[in-house]
Length: 577
Ligand code: ADP
Image (cartoon, rainbow, N blue to C red):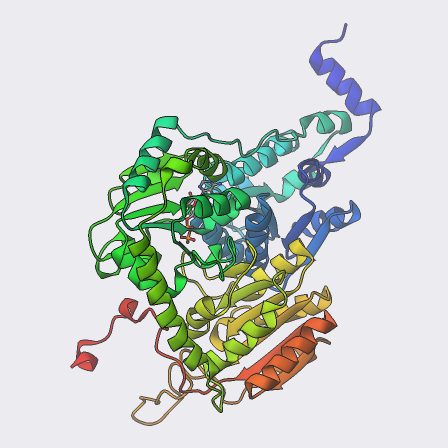
């Protein structure tokens, strides 16, 4: 009998060969990953070609950051890691922003980058696009791996998938040096090295005593509140979450990307009385939401009087991160919510009527006040009447995905545009970043096969505007609406230069026609000045199913500095006086 070494040598001579390129694609396909978002170049062009030849979709972008955002949002929508492929050094660094954003937002994503040769990089001998990418990625990723041998590609991909989707999801970096991709390997050995990951995101069942502690506290509340975060939307436990809200009768608030988990028109939604319920509630049940800056860290004026928190989360270390949590429930949201739901029987009771009545009163007051503001048509348009027009068109199409970014465009958009279905709203997320627009729009359109309406501030759109070409190239049903007020926040800030050199620091070209940009690539452009024109253009664009861009002319004086985040904007002492 031959020993192992002899039999390997024998097989290598007598059987077909495979290589690193094929093994990467085989490993992704074996794990049902059917799409790669990326940008080709040295050394990954053939990897993208092979993916396409093997029946995968390769969606090619104009800048890696947007490919990364597309992959991240695909991961959020599907619970499968979205994959982004980039070239080495600069391409990798461009993708790294999206990887860091995915990790911060708990989106499962894998950034795969080609890299230069280890022996040259490590001795700093000056290779083409030389960079120690693994070290650069590590602080910004949930995990980072490098594969050096072709027979380890299966393990590398399996580890990346598990790290991305298990526990708290996040971004994973997979480093593939150029030489690895062309390494040959016996085909049979290669086939055996591929791992089909079994149960990549195992359920994590909460401890029964933790569930009981949480329910006891919720039951004791006089003014209970449920806060749904994007972790709850990600968990795809939609029916149980809705049942928990409805059976308990507790009013709820959705964080922006959890909008639509229950329809925004649900009678238990307390969104129209947000500040009131946050300040007044005595027990708050957080489901997949962190007490970070978006929730004023659980303290201060926003939170008013004393309160106790119940927190449902998969990450035990999230608990007590900002304030004391009285009742942590650790596990996956599906299992936690199911367990809590099982404990809500007839004896659980409903929240006191005074609490519900007080909220409803507040809601009615605020809704009536808002209705007056929304009904007013101004010329040029302000944010409110433009968003009202969009809201009314989208009401008839609850299946449409909505991307929203900007300062004022985001702030007003979040509260004015109602969502009716889960995982349909994608926005600036945990970091509050700009630049996710076209990447998220493309990722959402490709993943869902459904239209996307991207509601974009003109400044926010600038970060990813070149991806209009990508949208047109793949003929995606994405309608971008640019809220064009000639600048960042506003278009009419003064130029402070004593010699009147240059323009104001917040200014853009006045009267820019963003609609002409999409026309350059064969898409449909609209320029609108009134809510009626906006309604007509959006209706027509959606009916066409084609890539379109609506340049919505907004009053250049309508915005406020930093939107609602003025408190985060340090001002000079001299200006304050
Ligand atoms: P938001 O910005 O909407 O408030 P965050 O991103 O702050 O939401 O919070 C999401 C939370 O959800 C994170 O703490 C994350 O650990 C948690 N999470 C994500 N997926 C799951 C899941 N499947 N089960 C339980 N918790 C989850």
